[in-house]
Image (tube, rainbow, N blue to C red; front, top):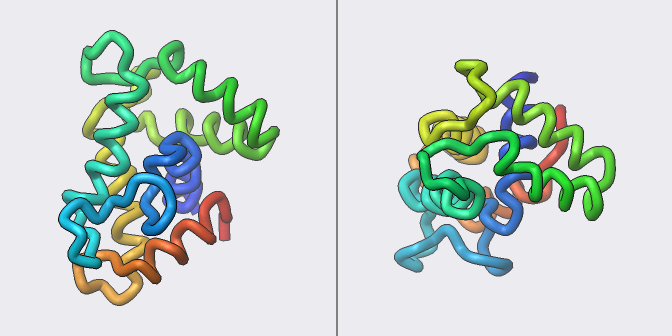
Length: 139
């Protein structure tokens, strides 16, 4: 249950960086029809860090994520805002009120492993679409 909540929260944070093909930036960087963990991580953790780490210290503070939290509240309503709050609760594993690159990558790895339904080590377009359709679901 906690892993699903963490996944949902990180996907809410990632916005257009969430893994999908055919819409927004594609995580399939080499365009071979397979998304490896390295590509997925780049589409997730790297982009989120690039967008939100305003002071470039390698961590995202709650203050730095405030803009995104406000957007989630405005456009996604209470559900999106709740997922972001849950992301801070479950994603900040060392409880320092910051999300480090390692914490973001751990969330990306959990989402990747959960989406890799056939356990072949890469995500197909179908697996990515299923993950997107299930985004924010808790069960």
